[in-house]
Amino acid sequence: MTTQAIEPRMELEQNLHMYRQMAKIRAFEEQVHELYKSAKMPGLAHLYVGEEGVAVGVCEALRRDDFITSTHRGHGHCLAKGASVNRMFAELLGKEPGYCRGKGGSMHIADPETGNLGANAIVGGSAGIATGAALSAKMRGSGQVAACFFGDGALGQGLLYETMNMAALWKLPVIYVCENNLYGEYTPCGETIAGEILARAKAFGIHAESVDGQDVQAVNATMRKLVERARRGEGPAFLECKTYRYYGHHVGDVNREYRSREEEREWMTKHDPLLTLASRLTGQGLADATVFERIQIDVKAEIDTGVQFALSAPYPDANRVDQDVYA
Image (cartoon, rainbow, N blue to C red; front, side):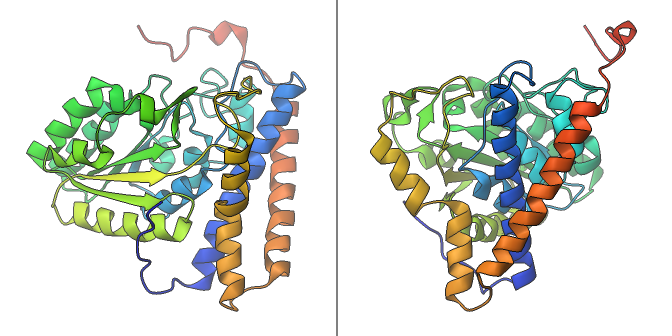
């Protein structure tokens, strides 16, 4: 795994904020898993546990009015961009206070107020939305940037390459963020992806880099460079983040016979994004274990409050079943 050189040490406050954001995403997803197992959540969910460093590293490099588009594994993206835990839980439980009034569910959460143009259950489906948002930003001269999250499975989708071609031709301010977690559903990406991943972007003349997605500082430092480049009008970029999902493809994928337990333990013990950042900060004498313990306590309280808010919230009125539905 290749780790990019990290820029001069960030302020401790920002590092602790990134740790808290990652801890919140992990605690949120662990609670989603519990809600599913206790039959309190309808449908399936695709958990982001293990990949927190990507969402947080990327979104911390963006302004609030910058855009993101997300995927079926998108809870982490939403939270990292500023979504409310309360409203996120409400949406997953199909409740009225949710971001889409309970109609979107796990794979279709959007929050325009934080620049989140929405998650998309279609693999690679949000590439066109992010590229369109970047075109809008350029035409309006707003200085906004769009970040498009997608998994390695989307590298087999033609839409991604059509939009990358357009973005390169028109020098649009969009960063394509490939979360390479090594598996497309249940298939190792080595069996589905030919050639070098970065070569695909470079073929369009798009600046491309690869980073250790388990190192939130490295992701953030690299993303900041790409965002600044886009704001200067230098066009799109492609960022491959090498990461790993700790759970299965979705909450019902419990056996995971397509990968070994040894591989899982290796990633969970040696490449965990929370442990990596905490160890680095304590090793540098910038924080001690009690700091991270307090953050975990605060995060648990926030998650507990969010769950209770969602469980007690009302379901949407059945008379509004056609509202906000377009054909």
